Image (cartoon, rainbow over all chains, first blue to last red; front, side, top):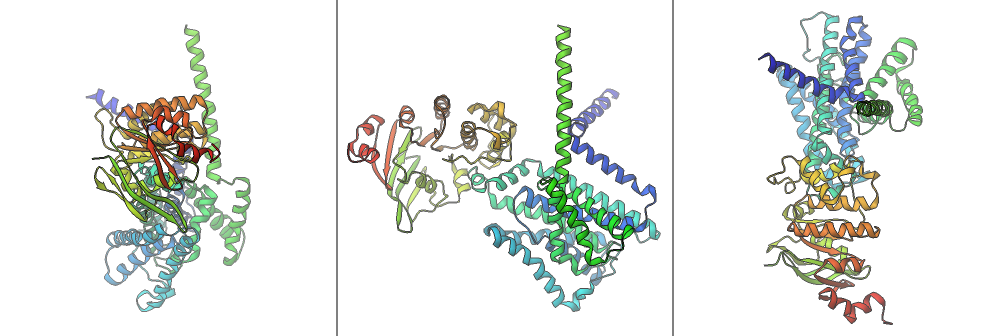
Length: 359
Length: 243
């Protein structure tokens, strides 16, 4: 009996070792995750927690975008459509029907995912600039509808306050609770998206990105896979959106900014900065930029007016992209992979030398 | 019943008739060559058969079933696969992943008794063309000759009944040509019917048993390699009227 447990534990360790310890990029991500887990012990200010929760949500949003655009090659410049649908669906249901959040959030996610199918269909037919412009227009149309039906949606004011996540805890503890909730959501979403991107389905996605016609010539139903990419991407984007409707970072409100053009472009910025096509790139990009923008430059150090905010991170992003055009996260993992290769070569060299000695 | 039956297939591009009422048939187990000067419609004919282009008139039948103008992936899943004249690999993916894409498709993922996973099957296909060493190499880094081999591996991974090869010997040296000739023979013995377009006639004539000649979209001759090489019309079309 003990023997079987030992064998099981050993196999768990081996799979952990090969999948994570040997892959420096993954190990680094795990370390950062553990750091983030223990971070609240340092008693951060509410402002900092606010910034970090926002960063986690935007990271989730950006990762979902990267799966669709970076891995499958389907341009989406209107990703805020899913985000906004997620937040407005759950907020409206909460406000008018009084349903609890564990009902409204799944419905919000479902709506956001299902809308990806009719959105994806014309996107499959369109090419280049037509695809970009159409995708860009859709959330703006939804925003216009929000304003048009202002009796229901409260227009620019936004719908709220909606049910909170932890209504029974003290104020500060709620922020910490939300911090962990957002971090867990990010971690689980990132793992799932990363697993999908590196699975057999992910291989088909990349084949569509590389050469759609050749992919068809292999027997792949490209339309089906594109819709799948749209749906998975929309699922996580609307999950991110549904979270914000009940989060204190928006004052538990669904805001019209969630359907804005700026919201659509945020994942583009984070992903380009982090490294397009990788899944960890946009996450790293989102976290770094959120920290820089929210904490260092925006709140704590300088008194910069809100309107100038984008400049505080756009300019560093542009500068850094000149140095590392493939993205900052890719640069880091490239360096780590080089070190890893050197280490493995050294080990192999030692092993061969040992063998020779024995002979 | 013929494996492939093409009847009066026609395709026009504006004023240009690329394929003009072409009729041919291929029986199971044959190796047929398709030759003709540049611009005679060979690749267009391939595109019509594999559903990449829709014909203006005419039919394509596979085992009696009308497959004219079906979507390309549906035709592949019915049993016709092709390689490309200018190779089209998935450059971001390693070689084995290129073949894995075919193994994900409905037809390509058909289980054969001794192959247990798509990765195993992809490895076997790479083995067939001799690319096992390059398994993890991104396709963007492979040489042209290796890319041609990868094309073939990817095509046979879809378990085709009919395999269309578009200039498999294009741009490769004689050693590679020799190796590919052997690979193609082996593929044929595995039970696949081959339809090959090729300009390198000396290499082609060694493999095929029957040759079809196109010129300006029309079928002008059909016969064994020996007959075709002696056919006056064919020589005229390739070499010009002075001969």
